[in-house]
Each structure stands twice: as structure tokens, then as C-alpha cells.
Picture 1: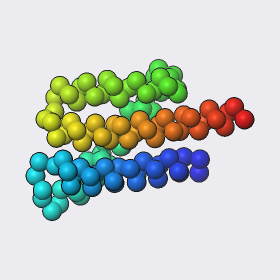
Picture 2: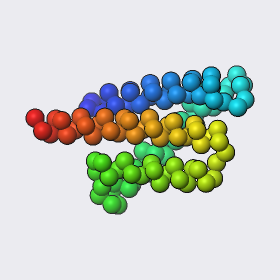
Picture 3: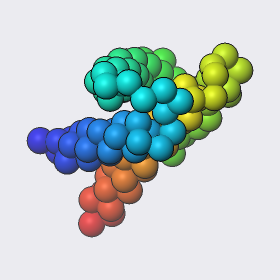
Length: 113
């Protein structure tokens, strides 16, 4: 139950990002594009969750150190993707960074009390 607010925040922000991307940044406006964006977000979120949990077990990092991983992922995305895909994935990474940072601040705030 402690993670539920962060998961809901992430899902709401991802949904809003998909709608905003479709309205303003999508190079092609097709009727099913929003569903494809949401499916891509789900796939990215599952891959992201598995990657982070494996990385935490292997390296043992927790907290602020984990915020460095998306920077490396962005470099890889920049080298191998077109502009619109890079912008979409960049938005998802920024959302995950914000939610992760909120979770870290919440954890340290509870730990300090």
C-alpha cells in the first residue's frame, strides 16, 4: 500500500504525457496512435521496472544513485532513435525521474521523523 500513490501518480502522468504528445508532438495523427502510445508506455514501464530491480540487486544502489541510470539510457536512445521517438521516451524518463525523486524524498522524510 505504500507504493500505490506513486504508481497511480506515474500512471496519471504517463496518460497525460501520451495525450499531450499526440496533440502537439506526434508527426502523424492517426486515430489509434494514442492506444499505441499507451501500449508503448506500458512496455517501457515493464522493461524499466525489471531493469531497475535487477540493477539494484547487482550493484546495491538505492536512493539518488539510481537517478543516474536514465541519463545513460537517454544517451543510448539519442544514438539509435528518430526525433519523435526520442522525445516520447524522453518524456517518459522525465516522468519516471520525477516519481522516483518524490518517492526518495518521501522515504527520507519518513526516515527522518
